[in-house]
Image (tube, rainbow, N blue to C red):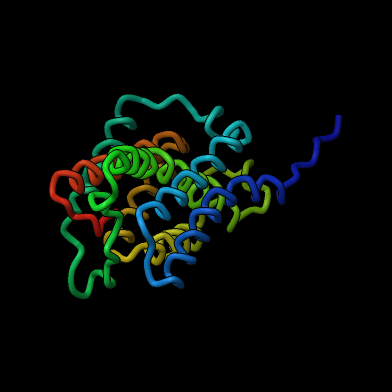
Length: 222
């Protein structure tokens, strides 16, 4: 029986859409010269909704290979290491100007708690899954093969790894920390072929960062 052709355009779209929604809000915020916490909440809620609606289409999550204990530990350690770098590489030549960030403390009583909860959820869950699906599972493999779902991450070319890592860094104001993060998450994915472990690594970084932000009031890191 002949193989059923994969609709690569559709597969690409569903992996890019949540990220595109998120970036559209970021671009609009930049053009407007800033945004209120409610704007940030709308951005996070929209990206989360897009991700939830498309979640059944991400077959790489369902088909991820069973990780070993060593792989899981390595992914966790990578996430912790990136968090440590992120909180230290935020000044001078290694970082562009940071925005004011998401500070809900000035909101009316009753709004601060829900806004913080949504932001922390998006930071620790939505963003890691959204970005790993887009950057690693999709773009890293798509650069080498339009039939990216059939491509083995372990066979990723140096060009694909370098380009995705550089673009991931350029997405963040803290470009050096972003470069290190992109390299670390890509290494986890290439070595394990497991996008769930890569997402776990990214989620640990962001969860620790969220806790640190709440503890120190360093809202610019949102």
